[in-house]
Structure formats: C-alpha cells, structure tokens
Length: 293
Image (tube, rainbow, N blue to C red; front, side):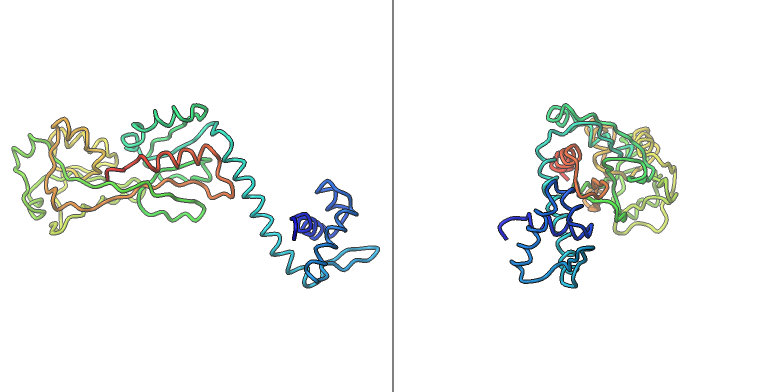
C-alpha cells in the first residue's frame, strides 16, 4: 500500500456507510473516495463493501478489516498529535497537588524548572487529604504509598529513607536507645494518617509490641516541631528531618537498624495525549527528586 489514503477513505466510508459523507469528512469527492477504496480492495484481493444504487454496506471481511483499521488510524492520529504537542513550548497553568511536607523536596528544584519553562504558571496545593485527581481537575499529584486508581498514569520519583530522631536535650535526659527494644522506655511521637486515623508503623526489627505514646498528630511538620522541642522520639522521612539534623536540633538514633524506604510517585490522568506542560514537569522532577535516596 503506497499510502494511507485508501485506508482512511475506507474507514471514513465504513464509519458512515456513505462515500459522499466520507468525502465531505476528508475534503475530497465521493468519486475519489470510491476510487481509493477500489484500489484498496484490489490490493487486498477482497471485497470490502456491497454497493447498490441505494446503499453501501460492509461485507463480513470488510467489517473485520474496519475494526482493525479503526484502531490503527486512532493510533496514527494520536502519534501525530503527540509529536505536534512535543514540538510546542510548555505553557499555561499547571495544577499540582502534593503532601504538606512536599514543599521540602519540591521547592528547592522549582527555580530551575521556572527558568526553563517561564510560560508555565504553577498552582501548588499542599494538603494531606486524598484527592480525586480527575474530579478535582488537577494536572499532576505527588503521593506516596499504594497507587490503585486505574484512571491514572504513574511515574516513580525515587525512594527516601526513614529516620528515628530526638533532640539533644531529650536524649541527654532519657538516654540514647541502643536497640529497638529500648524504645519501650521512651516517649514516642507518632504520625496519624488523616484518611484512616491509624498510626504510622515504625519499621524496625525487634520493636516492642507496644510503643509508649507521648503524642499523636496528623501533621508531619507538627511532629517535627515536637521532636525539636524535646517531647520525644519521632519516626519520619529523612528529607523532613534534614535541616534540623544539619543545625544540630535533632540527632539520629538506631541509624544502622533503620533500612525502611518510602516511595513517592507523580500521577496524572491517563490520556491519549500528554500535554507539553505536564510532560515537561514530570520529566524535570523525575530526574531531580530523591536522587540521594
């Protein structure tokens, strides 16, 4: 087949069961559609239509061929649209939702993104509630944990580690735990998930069955503040504790026994055509976040 003109003429005529309507859709005459289809039938050695003076209908072979050709044409049009989109400069409003603590890992890389794509206007929503990406009209969400929504496409952004930390004043008063079993004698600060209300598990081998609970809260930043204030030991992502550790406000404990990692992913509504602004954002953060994890 020298070109796709015969294929497209056939699909349009089969969609409408009319050579005249197919011609109008393609911007050519009904006669040209008929000639394209006739050449295609000759090449295939099959009759695709039964033609009378009053109507056009598909043969059995034509119906089977139409089903496959329709998928092929859809893929070709999608590929062409994707290539055209890729050539466009990313621009417009980009709505991104991420956890409250997400500013700690995202904001440091955003100046570089803004410099590369000055025509993209970022609209950031920081919250810890589960959001319906499609219903909320969001372009991208960044979330950790299980990704179960089949309407979304996901790209892993990289792992992060968990750390167990306490303030120097707290550790001086209560001692530094030497094993997970020692945590039974310490004040523990626990994160409570907003959606389920359950406490986040501390993943450590040899952990006592019941940790003494000094404080539970549904905000990671508040838990960080409580740890810095000397209220107890807290289990949190390393990027959340990084600045306080660097300033000496917190110290890591049981570092050699903490091997658990978490995973953030970027998710966006599944679509046949990914917009240039979403593609640019996902590609940019995909190679810059959590690279030290």
